[in-house]
Image 1 (tube, rainbow, N blue to C red):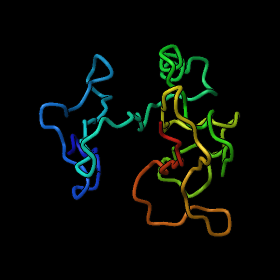
Image 2 (image 1 turned 120 degrees about the vertical axis):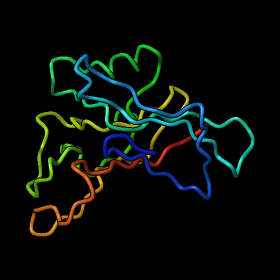
Image 3 (image 1 turned 60 degrees about the horizontal axis):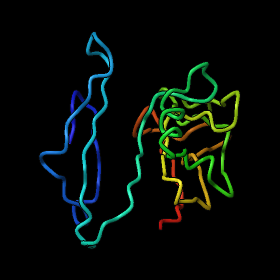
Image 4 (image 1 turned 90 degrees about the vertical axis):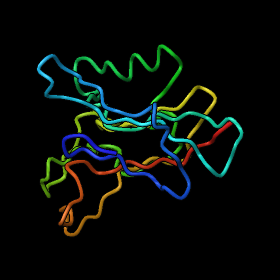
Length: 155
């Protein structure tokens, strides 16, 4: 699924997109910022599964207002980074801006892409996924963001 060049990728062999639960959200009045989203159903398990929110929330703890993290925490949803036992590249921002130079955040956990998990979940590992050679990101790059990855404990 995509909108204006933004894409949401998922394994079609495992998930089915719920047609009435997909689209995009305009994030500003000019219509210049938006988020692509979809509700996916796991076709390999018919029981109720835990919910995880993941994506580019365009906010980080180095800014004066980390609104998405604060709002999620008010509902007992937490950044998997904060719940992880171990980290890889915790000061690397997941946003790379198509540059090969690593952007390091002022504060650890200053990434703009997040994985939010409920209070009942935990995480053993968290990392910014990237390939570096001589301290530079390898090109070609698939996106202006590096993926983030976490190994989660699900209830």
